[in-house]
Image (cartoon, rainbow, N blue to C red; front, side):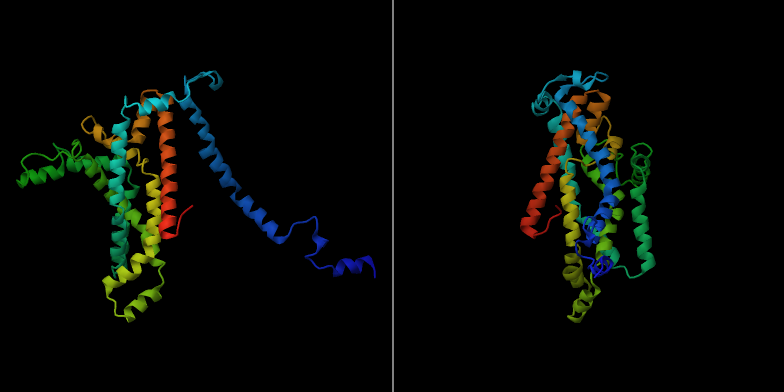
Length: 320
């Protein structure tokens, strides 16, 4: 038997391919190459900036090389917890607004269920489009709209209510510190409910229609089908978004509260993000603001892991 015959009869899976790559290995390399650009972007824009956390441990002076900065250890973390700053006020405002936001989390779910029950498809799509548009409006324009409606002097709502003698003096939600939290939650709901409902509408569309047919055969009406089929079908999506919202409980946004903040309501709308901006950029307290940022990130990670563990223990499902 010649050498050529031996090579021809060698099975492809035997060491004849030794030194080369199997199909599975080639597939893995292709997948790795496909995600490599995203890994690079993640490293450059999300992990490389973490080197800036070193500013929290030194009396940072702009322009001085980092190795010549004075190392002060946990000085700025001790200042945060010393109570001699606005930390407690900022924490109170941030947690209050976040918990109010979590309390209103079911509203996009309810809106999505109601929208899915609209039988006229064109009407349903029109409502969905109209309610999603506010999500694309910048917070600057949102403030302009709110000012046009609720300004104490020229606001349209105030003029109408005063002309109709419904109220004796103008409403002042833009400058009131008493109703600042609730007004911001309402503004946030107006802006985000339609957009937030889209993912739940997609989840409802993914529910097996045979479940609805089986419920109809069992005599279930529209409400019972919602209760026994629709809600259980979208609960996993709701809990995933709830876990992510809990992890962001200290990151409830910057633009909204920065735009609506003024001298009259700043004691209610000063949250972590606006405070870090004010201390870091406006007051040039780079080290202190970096320490605040680190604190916020660490607490967010702890909250995410805790909520994830709780979900895993109770629901046997988790996102990590």
